Amino acid sequence: MSELSQIPSQMTAIVQEVYGGPEVLHFAQVPRPALRPQDLLVRVRAIAVNPVDTKVRAGGPANTPVPDAPKILGWDGAGIVAAVGPEVDRFQVGDEVYFAGDITRAGCYAEYVAVDERIVGHKPQTLSFEAAAAMPLTSLTAWEGIIETLGVDEGGRDAGRSILIVGGGGGVGSIAIQIAKRVCRLHVVATASRPESQAQCRKMGADQVIDHSQRLRPQLQELGYTGVDYIFSTAPLGNFPQLVEVLNPLGKICLILGGPEAKALDVSGLVPIRGSVAWELMFTRPRLNVEPEKQGAILNRVAELLDDQTLESTLSAVLSWRDIQEAHRMLETGHTIGKIALRVDG
Image 1: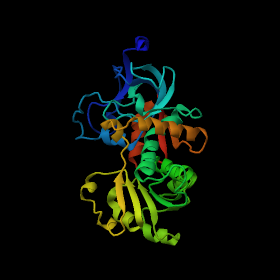
Image 2: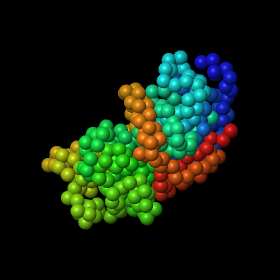
Image 3: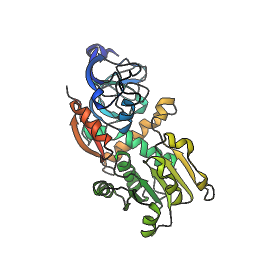
Image 4: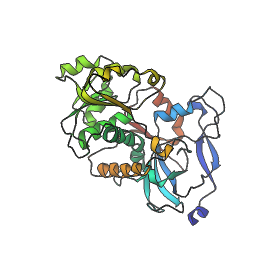
């Protein structure tokens, strides 16, 4: 780890000391992160924002202190390996990487971040740092949800079966459509409620688009569907009864949002059709140390698919990290399409 002696012990980061709105985020000088044995120290070149960032930022009563302040958010990044821990064997200094990180550790709103090499992928060679930073968290969520949780075959053995992707215009939905259609070769029906998000779904490859602000079943029936084989939903659970209503017998549902509604979720409608429901949470593997190396493997596979143009980045806007507060405000409108990335200046 001799490289560390050449790196300043202090770094610039975006931090918060208290819970609140976007205004609590500010720049500060903080210590460079220490490395664990399997860690990479990454010089961050670009970050991307996600709804989880805003939820953690506002995760307590306004103006009350956050634990272990100053807290650094950010779980989507791309950069260059600046130093490695003593047990690292997959990367070396100078490698370009991308990653989603671990929510239990300091994030990547910083000049440097420490991240376990097992959950890091080699950055797609054909993408800018900003376009690459837009991909890890959403790609992992969609890949784990569709291929692992729903059990759809990556090689196309389930080609022609149907999937409903609820919330297809956002960051997760945009890559989920691509993975379902372009990798797994499913027939994809996506949902979106605005013309812009509907256009995004079609651009990503959806075969049909319906409006999730209206009842789903009549719209699917109008398109000729009696039901769908799989459902991947990025939406809150208020519409769960509608999902059960349109699921084919033996069908499977994957949800990525829980919250209070999950405590009283009525799954009785799944019993007569022998349907199943499960959750996807991409932070589970790094947080609980459950086969974290699978996330590095997924990111490397996604990088290959991006480089051969099977998949495309869902990047929709690039800002400077000086605009972090504005990026959070944009996310909180609930109307962002694709992903917002920020250049890390300095």
